[in-house]
Length: 142
Image (cartoon, rainbow, N blue to C red):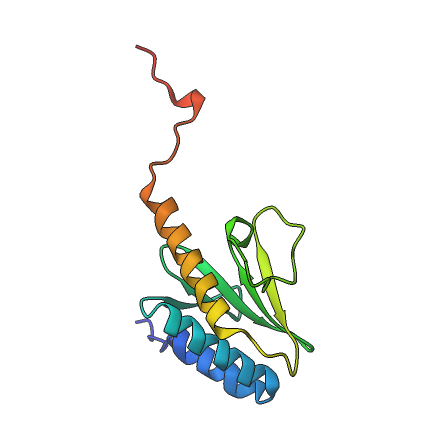
């Protein structure tokens, strides 16, 4: 008989990560998380790729990675989002993603970040609602 191993919820794992960091990075990740939930109360928390907090609504909205000198918010479809406040300051050369690197002492424009999160959710919902294009090779012989 298999023993069932208790699995922690993604939210509990994120709580643990914030507590484990215990410095400005933990405080920054906690603040970013708060802003994300204020922007979209329906957003889901996930834990992927061996320890990365992920926020999703109809697809990945953003991740919250922590490094020695930066907390990085990577938006999965950031290149498709308008960024009038110029929050994106990293991964600017990619075709799909964009990121915001937050360094110790940086002040995050919460209103602009909420707008960006809402735009990312709207994009996910729009893409999810569209039918997938058919491939040319999928035509049936008739």
